[in-house]
Image (cartoon, rainbow, N blue to C red; front, side):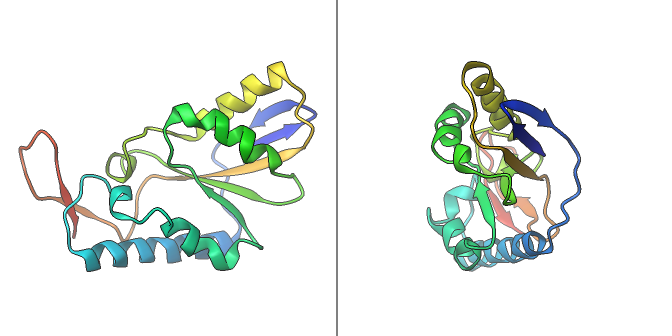
Length: 166
């Protein structure tokens, strides 16, 4: 969890996710991804490339008034702009969640290599150069694996592997 208070940054790792609404959303989101890709019955290099741009927004739409969840999948070079344009508006009075995908799942999710430390680094650099007016709490949801989404490589030995869901 990342906390910003009076422009001071603190980071606590390995915090257990206790919000049942978020846990429920993540389970539902995982099932929606699996069903969408399975129904498409296509091979893929990265899962994210198979999902429509609005997939996450549609999945979270019914909860956006209750939960502040951001799906961080952009390239690390865009994280600074995302922090300035989106995350600085976060408020400590509300739970804010950022989903990141970590290896081994990230290898098949996307190819941007963005992770939670990119956000922490930007906040740290920003706090050195500016006054951050809002107190902010961000819980990172670092997804490493899935109980439902399992992969099978369909072009064994290829330099650019392609996968399908089992």
